Length: 77
Image (cartoon, rainbow, N blue to C red; front, side, top):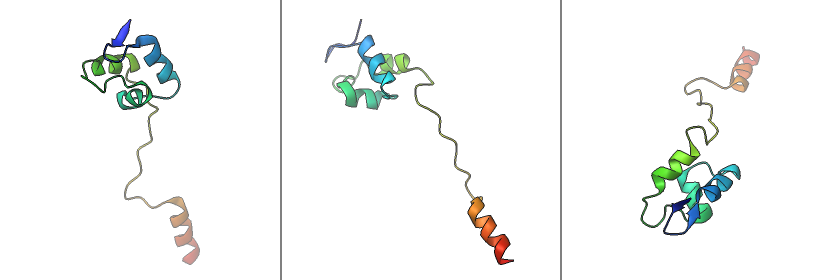
């Protein structure tokens, strides 16, 4: 079934690009142009990718010193 009629991109192609590491509509667009013309397929691409398409990043600990900094403080004391 076609996802992007403008460029003739199928669901199978989107899934193949996702398996190859394209985990967002923007990355899919870079891989096969889907979603770059009229944009009507972007929501369908998002649905195909699902919520867990991209690996989650651990949030940075803001305001907390790094372990190396703490060790340096202990040695200086």
